[in-house]
Image 1 (tube, one colour):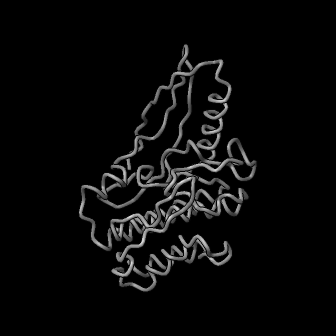
Image 2 (tube, helix red, strand yellow):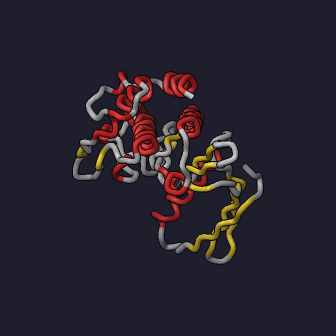
Length: 231
């Protein structure tokens, strides 16, 4: 990934207190994140009615575009998944939950298959239970049903739930769950049975089982170790 900077400009209305507070919350979280697998934030400044945010210019493409355009082999998919797992572990160690993990919010360098998490607009500082932490947030098909508990553990586990969905999409070309705020409908598909590796299938199922207890889901180190062995 390059270390060049890109400046994004956002117009804001000084009367929109909620929008300003939300933006301030995101910038505070970005400032706390300085880890290898997340986009870097360098600062911001205000001119007239615009705020300019200076961030790392990340090389590569969104995982969604990579998934749609590139025929990835098994090893490449496992490398990407291992690196996403490392990224989640890194931000969780900082008490940050992303809360909107999906293919569009992950950048991939196709030369190395390193990844960077982007778009922390719905992220939450769990140490402070910052703005929005008491609201279920995210993209419907990637929201863990257990996020409704709205506690620190469920916030972190929600990121792992989304990761399980991402894994399932990469290896089967299907969504595992048709999610929605009105309920979760498992998609009955034979594709899951086409995943031959017992460990790979097991880890996906444990990450995305809506009925499994939080304590029975695999730990971050177990997930990463399993992916390391598989690749």
